Length: 87
Image (cartoon, rainbow, N blue to C red; front, side, top):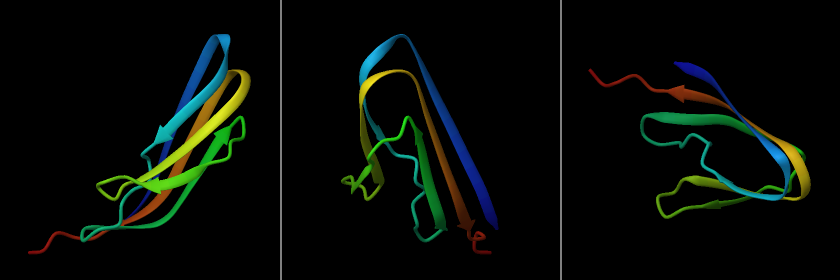
């Protein structure tokens, strides 16, 4: 069965912050039970996103937003094919 998954996180800062440094573990894994067919990440304000894998093989998206901002929005969207349980 194919699922479309969307996760939105918003941070509102009062007063504005000078910088944000974040790590996200939002990308579904591909393993023996499921396949991540697509994944996208949208960040406002725009950020240069770097990717690495942690010790367990999870995708970790890391980014930094230098400069003053009052709002940070992160939207992660994935299409995941989940395999049926064996009978």
